[in-house]
Image (cartoon, rainbow, N blue to C red; front, side, top):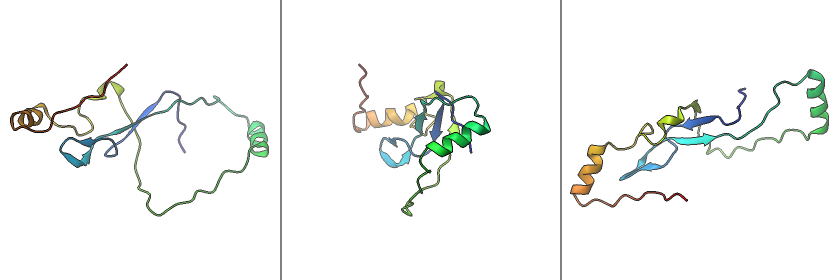
Amino acid sequence: GEVTKHDSVKIIKGEGMPQHGNIFNKGGLFVHFNVVFPTTLSSDMVAKLKKVLPPAPQVMLSGEEEQVSMQPVDMSQFGRGAGGGRSAHEADEDDESGGAQRVQCGQN
């Protein structure tokens, strides 16, 4: 029942990338919406759209669905550990104890 605005970003906590060294602890999954909606629709326009558009498909559920909640998010916090990442102290301990080497994604 919520209108999704163009360029909005939401987060699904606990459904993002797994934490290094603990695959069961996941960060946030960021969803960026790129949509365009009309600002208003008259009741006449709604009736015309219902007439020309196919009926909404029936949703087929598998029984394995999970309920999640999307929340507004401040993108300036992206990558700052808000999704449950490790602290700098934990990362230093891995480096000293010969833990796995961290890999970063490259950007073009």
